Length: 170
Image 1 (cartoon, rainbow, N blue to C red):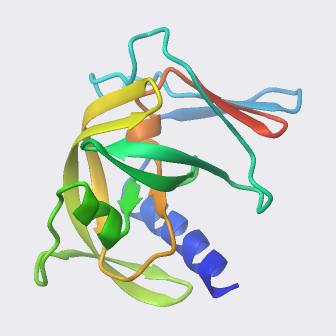
Image 2 (cartoon, rainbow, N blue to C red; image 1 turned 90 degrees about the horizontal axis):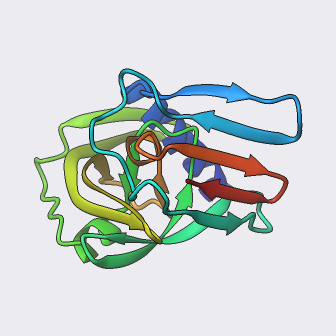
């Protein structure tokens, strides 16, 4: 229970820290489509224009995927409500991203209390065939249960669509 509260808290942190560059639109069908092609979206698009990735909803109601971060694979929760990619310290370390004491210059308030964060840039982040370079992210000083794949990556994808129990990126 505490882990789920912390995950929800980290999602709220990311939303509070940076605003999303994408615009969200929900269709009248049970399919939810997030249009990420706004004027504020970064020039660096994810994928090659025809790449596609899909994931099935896990029993806990979330979407998870194995994501390559600088060539290292980490299990992440795909969180369309998080403004930033947020890495656990162990996922950051596995990807060659160092986080030393004193480098956690950002803070955020979660349900579990205040946590410190280190702003970083991921050289290359890939979700299946959909990949991007120079992705802004945060490393959490606190021990989080899972890293979050948020809008700092998802806004670079042309379409993020949730239909029933399937999430598709194109």
